Structures are given as structure tokens and as C-alpha cells.
Length: 426
Ligand SMILES: Nc1ncnc2c1ncn2[C@@H]1O[C@H](COP(=O)(O)OP(=O)(O)O)[C@@H](O)[C@H]1O
Ligand SMILES: CC(=O)OP(=O)(O)O
Ligand SMILES: [Mg+2]
Image 1 (cartoon, protein in one colour):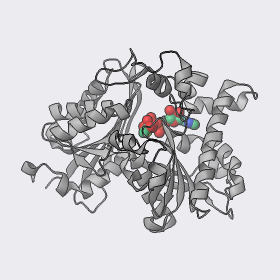
Image 2 (cartoon, rainbow, N blue to C red):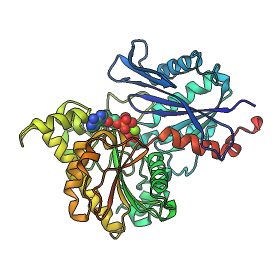
Image 3 (cartoon, rainbow, N blue to C red):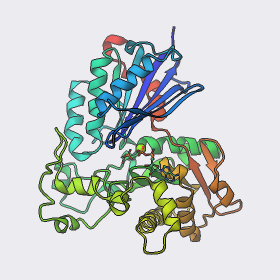
């Protein structure tokens, strides 16, 4: 029997990343056979990155691709026409399409997407205006172009269902909070699940005994306090806007700021995407803030480089310093939550993995807690999923983890495959 094929799809607001896996049994980890990414959907032309075996394509422009839907269509065509990808010659070869859905509300485990689930997720789009709609567009595209595939949703908030009551409750009228489901959900959970397992394996400790402070720093940034392998605190909230600033997100602000920003910041936005209900305030704080608003670029690599050249009053330097300030606040607070029993501080996500300067500044700021860097290891981390960058003999370890949300979905999918298949298929 040929191996089963899983497509793990991570739809961002400006990119679509798809990893192709095969698996034979639910217990063995799936094997990644290709990775493809279409980026730059909001800053055309979109570009392609592809790798399969020895074949690598990077930066190829795709002038006809300008939406999540057309990106998926392109990706599917590319994969099925790659002669070297024997396992995926036709859309019917795909058994499961896994979708990272950022806001899953009360859904707490991977769920097959049928008509009802789809509508529930559509309703939740209000709570993740930048994220859920893109994923749902691709669910639709898979349904049309790969009718034999089973669509499964993997929720970014599911990892945080262990948040203690006090950590997840806002100090507002409890009746309204319950009725409107207003609580802290937390996100980047697929990444934190991957990090927990990878770091536990690296430290040769059972995940149930692992205490870490993990930082997922990408376009969206968050921190997570993990005790005994479970989330007990995280910086994002009801939506992915809360906590740390991001590429275009403000992160925490005084909620009253909204009413003072513009006179009509509370009104629905003219720029709202079709099918979404997004106020102008959400538009401004989610899409027109963050480092982009401070410096004009969403690339933290550029900010780090220019910050190093700038004097104390430069805006790149300010954006960099704001990140260091907010991240170290969370590290300090999570250190207290863990009572100082910390196995490691873990950096992950594009910035966490590539941003040596940011790691250096953050670790310097929290050095009073017993974290210290090996400068050479930090400047050029070794290859590997989890790598040590901390100084030998320091009280606590510092690690970099190459996190992988797609591989987390594929692993969970293969493990739960029997329960996820459509009844007619099994
Ligand atoms: N050398 C670098 N130093 C610091 N940050 C970087 C570097 N290269 C890329 N980045 C940042 O990594 C981000 C992408 O991270 P990633 O986790 O892939 O984001 P996404 O949330 O879109 O999945 C880029 O937007 C950029 O800000
Ligand atoms: C939840 C979230 O912010 O995701 P991303 O970093 O991919 O935007
Ligand atoms: Mg991401």
C-alpha cells in the first residue's frame, strides 16, 4: 500500500506555507517530503520558495498570484506537476489537508471540518480578523480542488486550554464575559506544543516535568509560561492582538487609547475585508501599528541591523528597544510564575531563530535571573532543531528551537488519523 499523504497548510495574512508529509503508521512520525511557500500576497508580486530533496527554488516571482485562493491553486499545481514528487501526482492522492486555524474558540482538539464546523469557524473569524478568514478560504479551495481529501482544523489556542482560571479571566462582568466568551485564549499553540516536545527530548526529560519560558517571535510575537509541559500563562489574549507588539500589531496598550486615537476609531472600517466584521480600531491596532508603524518596515532583521547603527533617538533603535523591554517584562513575570524553577528560556519563530542581536539584548536584560549567553554560539547557532546558546555553568539554559507548526499538525494528524477520517472513507 502506498504511504498516506498529508498536506499541512499554514495560511498567514500575507503568505501560505504548505509542507507535504507521508506516513505509514500512526505511531511513526510523518516524513516531510517537500515544503512550499508563497509569500508577499499583500506586497505583490508574490514569490515562491520550494524545496524537495536537492531541489531548491527561492524568490521566483509569481505575477498571477494575488490571493490565498490563487496561492493554493498555484501550490497544488506546482506539487502535482513536480516529476520528482512521486507520492503526489494528483489531488486525489492527498488523504488529509491539515489547516492551522488561529482562533478555535472552545474547540480543544483537531477537528474534521464539515459544514457545521466550517460555519462555527466562520463565526469565530470576528475574534481573529487577520487570521481565520485566510485559513477558511483555503479550506474552501481544498474542498473544491481536492474533493477526496479530509479537511482537518488544528487550533492555535488549543494548547492553552490548561490556563488556570485566574490567568484566563478578565476582570469584567462575569455574565457578559461568559455570554460573549470573553476570556484569554492564547495563540501560537501549535508552535508551543512543538517546542515543548522538542525541548523535552533535547533535555532528555519527560514533557510532563518540563518548565520553560518560551518565546515565539515572528510576524506575531508571544510569550508562554510552560509548567510541567502545560501552558499556565501566555501573552496573547482574547485575540492575537494582546501582549507583545508584532510586525503590524500594537500589542498591549491602555484600552482607552482606542477612543483617543481617532474620533471614529470605534466604527466599522471601510477597509474591512469582505465577510469580516472589523472595526477601524481593530484595523489600526492590528494592521497599521507595530514596527511597521514605527519604522516603515515589517522586517525585524532590517530593524536590528539599523538599530545597531543608530543613536539613542533613532526610530529603528526605539522599535528594537521596545521589543526588548516588553519581552523581558514577560520573562520576568513568567520566572515568578514558575517560582524560579526554569529549565530553559527558549527562542523560536523567525526572529527568535535568526535574531542574534535581539536574543543578546533580551538575555542581557534578564541576566539577573541567572541567564547568560555563549556569545559565539548565539552569533552562529549550530544546526539542529534545538540548540544551546547559553553560557556553560550559568544557572539556567538558553535555547533556540526551530519551531515547525506544519510538522506539529502532521504528527497529530497521523496519530489521530483513524478518528479523523470521514465515515465513508474508513
Ligand atoms: N536575520 C533576522 N533577524 C531578525 N529577524 C529576522 C531575520 N530574518 C527574518 N526575520 C524576521 O522573521 C520574520 C518571519 O518570521 P516567521 O516566524 O516566519 O513569521 P510568520 O509569523 O509570518 O510565520 C520576518 O518578518 C522578519 O521580521
Ligand atoms: C497567532 C499569530 O499571531 O500568528 P502569526 O504570528 O502567524 O501571525
Ligand atoms: Mg507564524
